[in-house]
Every structure is written in structure tokens, then in C-alpha cells.
Length: 456
Image (cartoon, rainbow, N blue to C red; front, side):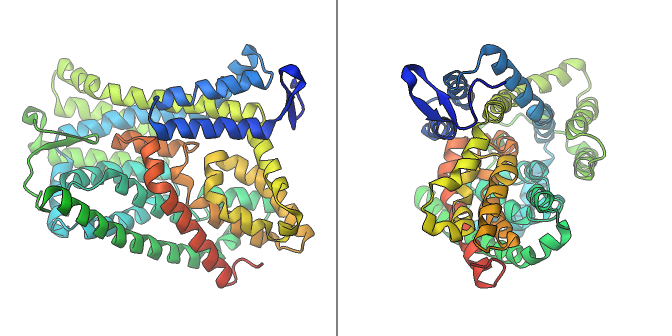
């Protein structure tokens, strides 16, 4: 039995602190630490939630249970991450992406705006399988070197992929619609049909955003470097770092097509879901190493080279597992979800679904996807019914308002995968992308109301 009610926990001196407030403060502290960059993400996601656990009255034994629960939820992602980083690192070493980069430069003629627009289109196609992790695995290793070659901001790459992928993620086989359909007990395909126009409009808005940000990026590069011609830059680009030295001994130009086949097969198995993603990359590493590097010493040297990046980000994902385990195990997430609707003035209750939709992206920073759709959504839906608001209107408002922010949330494991693949920081990603994604969600929400998908 828990040592407190679901609403309050007693502190020293007889002061009562709402569980939702405790959870909210914990999350805000973590986000502030991530944005400040003063501590590593591992520290930010371990120390504050542990302190909150003890403030809430839990013991070390229960903390261990929360860690085990959270670890089980992210372990597959962490293991996949380790072997994905090593696999793509080997593919970069052998020069697999170099012809692709050169081809993209030739097709786009090094035009910054065109590259930004193409990024959105590639992300839209990659996200059709409904998996954010596979989208990042497909797009970032291929596009990041191009961005770095052209001196484009890699955070723009993350923004464009995140926004495009989130809009496409309204498909029936994506997670959010499945959760809503299970709560409402409706056919998921019928739930999806009205959202198709929103998806189309969302993609068009992302293309418009890419156009605008592409021009802005072009002007920044011209101002900073005085030229846009980096197409002949021979600097070596790997994992978000530009180095002046290229180790040509690692390149395997004669094995280009062999490595391309290996990469395509690994990604194909990943998308098809034939085996777990971690296993697909593990097998890919095991095949690529002996084909490209003959001696055990050379093979292990490649592993040792890429292991630090892989293990660093895997440790952060495990720390995120502890964070999620504590928020779920203590009941903080459910408390936030259940109490979020109680702070509104009663006069606004009839517009509750719109208000929650407008706040959907900020809620992504406070609630996991499960907590948002399985805890907050049922409460909002029931309150809405009492004011004559159709359940589907509530569902669409909360889906459209929230889904765009999926890939800027530190609670989404796929985001950490994207950051690891690109060598970028969560705090800077939030500062660069958050308000663009929030603005996009509000615009889409307004369009949905205007065309009658959501009723007021």
C-alpha cells in the first residue's frame, strides 16, 4: 500500500503537498536543467526524481521497484541504440554515405532551401511505418552529413524531421490513435478518416515552414561565412563533428554496393518488424565488420571507436527510464493528468477540450504519451460530455493539439535516439524547436475547428 493518498503526500511539519504539484515541479526542474546545459542529461534525469521520490514518502525498496519498471520500458530502446550507433558508425567509416551526400548536393545544387524542403518530404515517407525511432534511424545518418557539409544548423534538421514525422504519426498504426480508439472503443480507421485533411494541411505547413527557415538559414550562412559554396569541402563529417582529418584507410570504395545492400537489408528488417530492432542492428554489425575489416584487431577497433557515443546515449536513455519509472510508480503522472482539468475556472469548462488542445504541446513535456491518452483524455472526455461536447471532438482536439510536440519531449525515447544519432543536446533542441511545434499545433487546431472536425 502506498504511504499517501493519490492526491496529497505529507511532508515534515504537517505541510501537505499535492502529488501533481510535486510531479510538476520535478518535471520543470528537469527541463530547466536540460535547457540550462549546466549538468548532463543523466544528472538532470536522475537526481531530481529521486529527491521527489523521498519527499513523497517512498523508501529505497520502492525506488528500486520504480527503477526496474522504468528500465524494462526503455531497455529495448537502449540496446537498439548501442548497436544502431555502432552500425551507422561503421557505415560512415567505410564511406557508404559519401556518394549519397554528393548525389544530394548535385540534385539540390547545394541550395539550402531545397535541402530543407527535401528533408520534410523524406521524413514524411520515412514515418509512414508509424515508428519515430525508425524514421530517425533512416533520415538522420543520411541527411546530417549533408547539413554539416553545407554548414546548415543540425537543429533545423531535427525540427523538420520531428514536425513532419509527428503530423504523419496520426496514421491508424501510430500510437496516439490506437490509444484513443481503445479508450473510446471505436474503430480506429473511422477515427482516422477525418484527420486525413489535417495531415495533408500539416505536411503543407511543414513545407512552408521549411521554405521560410531555409531562407533564414541561407541568410545566416551567407552572413557568417560569406559564401554558400561548400560542395568541395573535403573535411570529414561524423556524428555531428567536423574534423579536418579523413582516415582514408577505413574507406572501402570497392565494397560500396555490398555495404549498401547490408544497410538496406537492416533497415528493411527494421521497418518490417521481422525481428527486434536491436537484433537487426546487432546482426548488421556482425556482418559488416568481417566484410570490411579482416582482422579481429581492426574489427574491435571500429567497435571501440564508436562505443563511447553509443554507451553515453544508452546511459541517458536508462536514466530516462528511471525518470519515467518514478513518475509512473509514484502516481505523479496520473495526478498531474487528473488535476490538470481542475484548475480551470468553471466558466471555461465547456471549452475544456479546446483549452487542453491548445496546451497539448506543453503537456508533452509533463506527461508521457500513455498518461496523456489513458489518464488525462478520459477525464476531459467525461467532463466534455457533461457540457454536451461530443467525445470525438474532444479526441480530435487533444490528438491534434498534442501530437505535433511528440518529438520535442524528453519523455519520448525516440527523441533521445535522434539526439544520439546527431550528437546534439536536448536543451538546445527544445529551445530551437519547441515554439515552432507549439505554433504549428495551434494553427492545425484552429483549422480543424474551422473545417468542422472539432466542434465548439
